[in-house]
Structure formats: C-alpha cells, structure tokens
Length: 633
Image (cartoon, rainbow, N blue to C red; front, side, top):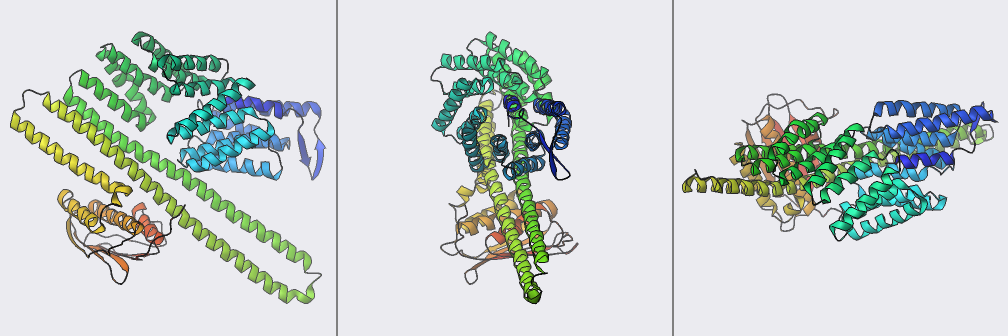
C-alpha cells in the first residue's frame, strides 16, 4: 500500500499544468481557476490517504470528490492519481472494487502514455496479490514498479517496492535476499531523504543484527526517521513494540509498551494495540505480576480482539492467557483456554483462506469482464468497418455478409472456448488454494496437538491426588486421542496422502466414519491398479471425504453404500444412501461441496452424476480415465 510520504511526493509532478477537453476541442482553463482545482484535488487525495485506516468512510468521500474535480478539470494525470488512491481506500475489505480501480487507473495511464503514477499503481496491485498469497504475481508487479521507478527517477516507489520484496522473501524464508532488498531500500531512502522508507528499512534490518544491542540501535534509528515524517504513527508504534521486546530491563520494556498503547489508541490502530498488550503481559509475568497480566488480557486485550472479530490475534491472546494461568497453577482453566485458542486458530485459518479465495475470485471475475468488454469492442469496430465499406463493395455484398457471419461465429466461439478455459483454470486455482489451506491446517492441527498433549501430560503429572492407575488410564486416552488427531491431520495433507496406497486411504476414511461418526457404511473397494496417478488419488480421496462429510451432516442415520472399482483402465466411484435427499437443479448454483465434486471430476477429464429427490436418498457416480494428468504451472 502506498505510504503517505509517497502521496505527498506526487504534488511536485502534478503542479505543471491542467489540460481539459470541452465539446471535442482542447482549451486551457484560466490559470487561477486551474491552480485552485489542482490544489483542491491534491488536498483531498492527501486527506484520503491519511484516513485510509482511521476513517475509511470519510476517506472514500474525499477521494470521490477528488475524482469529480479531476473529471471537471479534464486532467488525466490527476484522474489517474485519484483512481489509484480510491483503490487504496477500497483495498481494506472490498478487494474486487480495489482491483477494478487499480486496473482502470493502469489502463488510462497506458492508453494516454502518462506513467508518473504507474509505479505506485503496480505497487498497490502487488499488495492485493500478496494478500491472496500469490507471491509470484506480487514479485512480478514489484519488479515492474522498480523498473519504472528507475526509468522515471521516482526513488520513493523504488524504495517502497524493495521493502515489499523483502517482506515476501522474509515470508518465504529467503533471508539473504530479504536482507539485500532492505539494504538497497535503506541506501536509496538515505540518499534521497525519504524518512518513512528509511525508518521502515531500519526496523526490518534490526532482525538481522547479530547481537541484541545492535538490533536496539537499529530500532532507535528507525524511530528517529519515522518521527520526522507525518502519517507514520503505525510504523512508529510497531518499532516501539519491537524495541520493547529487545529490552532486557522489564521496567523499561513496560514503559515502552504502555507508550505504544497510548499512541496506538490515539491514532486508532487496534491491531498494534493488541500486539503491545500481548507482549506487555509477558513482561508482567517476568516480574511476577500475574494478577496484572491476567487483568490486562481478560479485561482489555481479549475483549478488544472480540470486538474487532480478529480471530488470529484472539487465538494468540488465548494462548498467552493459558501461559499466565499455568504459571498461576490454574491448570484446569488453562486447559479450557488452550482449547479456546485451538478452536479460534482453526476459525481464523478458515477466515483467512476464504479471504484469499475471495481476492482470487475478484481478480478472475474482473479479468473475465474485461475480456468480454474487449471482445464486444472488437465486434463493434468490425461492424463499423463493414458499414463504411458497403457503399463501395455492393457487388461483393453477399461474400462480405458470409465472411462477416463466419468471422462473428469464430470470434464468439473463440471467446466461449477462452471462457471455458478460464473457468477451468479458476476451478483449479481454487482447489489448489483449498489443498494448500488443508495442508496448513493439518500442520497447525498436528503442532497444536503436540503442544496440548505435552501440557496436559505435564499437568496430569503435577496433580498428586490422582492415583497411578487413573493417571495411566488418562495418559492412554490422550495417546489414543493424539493418534486419531494425527491420522486426521495426515489425511488433510496432500503430500502425506501421496505416499499411501489408495485402497488403505479409502478404507481408513470409511472405518473412521464408522467408529467416530457412527455412520452405517457398507463399502467395497476393488484392488487399485499397480500405478494409480497421484492426481487421480488426491481428487477421488477428496470427493469421498466430501460425500462422507455430507452424510454426517445431512443423513447421519442413513444406510450408506460406497463402491470403488476399476473397470477397463477407468476408476468408478458409486455412492448411495437412503437419507432424506434434496431437490437438485443443475442450472442453479449448488453448494460448495457439490460444486467441488463436479470441479474435481472435470479437472481429471472425468464426469460426475447425481440423482436425488426429497425422501429418496442420494445417488452419485463419478467416472474418470486412469491416465497421468499433465502438470499445470
């Protein structure tokens, strides 16, 4: 996202002149009026950029006024700038709108060959792809932003893009490249006097310092530069929190945390407030102030996270609260709090995954709309051409009509085929995103289970009133529980599924559904061919998981039959139950589960059929050829 410093740098580039068109003729506005409109737009844009986080509604109002003024002034440069800032304002939660305004600004910039804003537009677009975890696309956009910034001598865009690249490399654990990006960004920021970028670069480089004193020195330099620049309150608070984390003296750290909380509350930065409270609790614990630590979490931090519906931080705060309770020897309450942490973390992961999918869907949907608009524009241009030439080529009218008809049919058919390919690619990306999220959830579940079992085991060992046999029974129960959870996490992980035989995977899922969900399942699995492709295995396992999940939800008392067979180099899955059934219409939008089954079948060149009516159960048959699937990039 563009920093406020960057916004103010635009003022220089848009103070030269304002051009406008009226009734198809170019005219120059009176000098005084033009300067007033220019100053108004710059002021409105700057206010909108400052209020993106504090008051999004007011920021939207200001940037809309700026867009109207830019249109009134017929200034393409100012319109591009205002559309870019409008995208920033929308990027908080309206990802499709943000993507629309960024691409519109980019299109106007390219069509009019006005590139002064393009580096910042590409930077902002990269942030959307970053939020969707599409790091490859984000890196490509940032590289383009850097190249344009170098060609047009826009150091703020170069430095900001280098910092964003460093953040991506940090997430992907390419630490040497991350440090190199931060070093380059710092060098440019110091040379060009960019206080915000210098402060952020120093803060990021602090984590690469060999000793604690050096890291503290870097963070202090960060605060010096950030304090010189207005609109850097969020970065200042984050640097103060990081500095407090490194301080060895608890009293000094507590003082810094309290100052950061005051500043975060004053500038409406609730996420930074949560981070400061969480770290403040550990300093209280270090001093033995358990009552203060508990009040800080229970009365302030946790209610704030709940009011914000920020389940990521809420899970972290619950985990911290359990540490306080354990040190205070309230073990039973600590176990309850740990359970809340695990449940909240799972909810947070689901919400984050849904957010990423919404961003990808918004990008794909807008791309499809742009494709249709482009095709329609081509068609209109072609029709105008034909009408202009009809007077001169009457003798060839029949031939021209026939050629035009064929051309229209070909264009429509090509657009249809392209749309089908786009839909297939979209489905593949969504399913791949789901697989990545399942793998992430599996790892989180596995790690969280280890932590829970360890803490529960230590708690049991520390309770003297439990006799030896009872303790052994409880430990055996948690060992079995841990084994079952690990088995579930393994089935969520695609990489682990690839290492197990298909026959044993299906049998294990059915046995778990019988034992733990108490479903009545009769299953028959023919021996799989010696070489069953990995893609076939994964997709059919996921389809069976979806069918059993639907049975648990909608037909828990039904009799279920599940057959997997391999006739003539094909794989067939037959599922039936005598549950309540439902009304299914292919032309209407189905639920996510049913849509996933059809999408997975299409991805492996197969076909899925469903037959169901209310009161007559559900019948599925899925067929697919057993061939190696081409790997997609």
